[in-house]
Image (cartoon, rainbow, N blue to C red; front, side):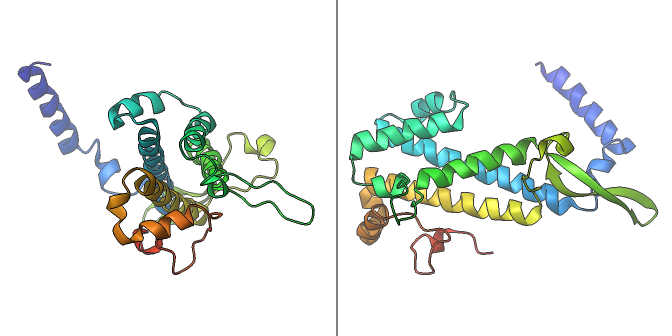
Length: 234
């Protein structure tokens, strides 16, 4: 793109803003329930950070630079396949050491199954698909000043009357809960990477984290869990 072309485009954009064409995007909210849309945006952003933490883990386990790891990891669009790939590397590199943390213990006679961390991550993967692909559901119209606008109560599948099949609509509290769980997952993944690849970075906390990764994961984490200071305060 030449400098003159760039200048013309900038001038056109400035003209559109001054004429008010973009004012609807900047001067007033699109709906009276922007909290729902903002919560979805934050949930998607946090899920992406969790994905990045998994990619860092993949690089460390495979013993390759992060840029090469990213080229491989992000070419795989199916989240379960990526999780299985990283999980296989965890088992290959560390054997049974961290199995109780990562893998779900099957149900035995008189003993309930214990969910592993991969199941926790997989549940986020599944819900992320709904968060991204479901549509806002119009509830009512309300009046804001002199303008009537639509309010969105929740997200539901397209043609949800035929497809919902018992699944609950996604509302702002569910989105906030998803974000909190993805924040926890991101920090746990990062700490596993540090504990197993860069142990000096954890200093005196190393043994504590190694013990945590040899036990079933706990969510929500107890108040004395070392992950708590790493999570945003709510």
